[in-house]
Length: 135
Ligand SMILES: *[C@@H]1O[C@H](CO)[C@@H](O)[C@H](O)[C@H]1NC(C)=O
Image 1 (cartoon, rainbow, N blue to C red):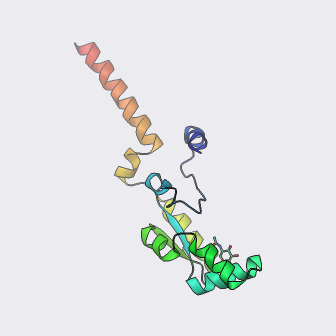
Image 2 (cartoon, helix red, strand yellow):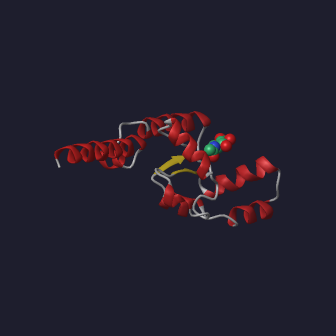
């Protein structure tokens, strides 16, 4: 995964999306920003899971309980997408999130970005060259 990220970063990708169901459990959340959680209320989650897998209530419940609760995940998220209603509503929210994450970086974000790193490297190089010439 780290190699993939490095490859994409070198290629110049400014946004890399990780689709990780166990992001918090695997402690990968320390390295990603922003964290987007797709949330639904527990009752809908149970109903949808049973419909999707054709599973019984007990089975579906134990699968849900094996993971960190969506409410806890929501509290750790930077952005929450509510997927309780229709697919159209989901698309609409997604467009907003996309606009939010593609907006220009703040200065602090820039410093830690790829271009920020290159600029820092370039500035250091130029400073060192000037310093060498003048001494
Ligand atoms: C959102 O809900 C729809 C059902 O309306 C489901 O098919 C879809 O997988 C859900 N999307 C996410 C990202 O959880």
